[in-house]
Length: 224
Image 1 (cartoon, rainbow, N blue to C red):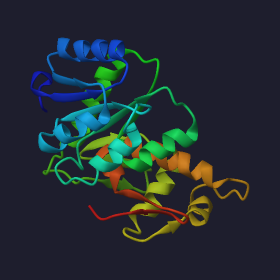
Image 2: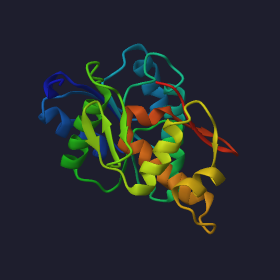
Image 3: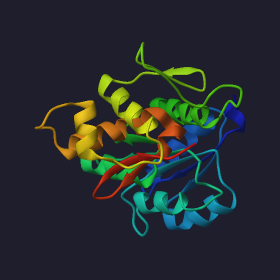
């Protein structure tokens, strides 16, 4: 695993006090940290010299965090860099939208700096693919999911959704079908499925990026 002192982290936050606190705290743990007050100013640097992890606020002047993430995910150099969204937005719609844009984790303000540090380290661990072990394994008998040799704790609903997507790679699954497979309740809304998918993406980390939103239809999981 990559040592903390060798990790390069970029923090984008438009509130100077929060930016300084975050940058200094991560630096105190031994990380190499660069801070930016605007996402549009940080974007060229991220593309030219990608860090190991990016921490970005959402509501900023100029380029929003969501749009910043969307643009980064279209760049080959940074499409797999872990991104943690830090924001005061707590609504389900805001969280789902950010995951759809490509974030790996989501932290709401106010937050503990120690918690953010742990999430940065966890994001780095998930991004380091161990080629000696399968990327993803599903045990249908035990209802267990193993990712790179480590168990991922999922709810039963999340497990059912993952199984449906994983056993039908590159095939679009409608929300209606996913509702039937995972929940079997007619009164369940599309938004409920979206929230479960957002949680599943977060728990799967780098693998979660392969779960793509097909707007107006549902989701599909692309081949690794």
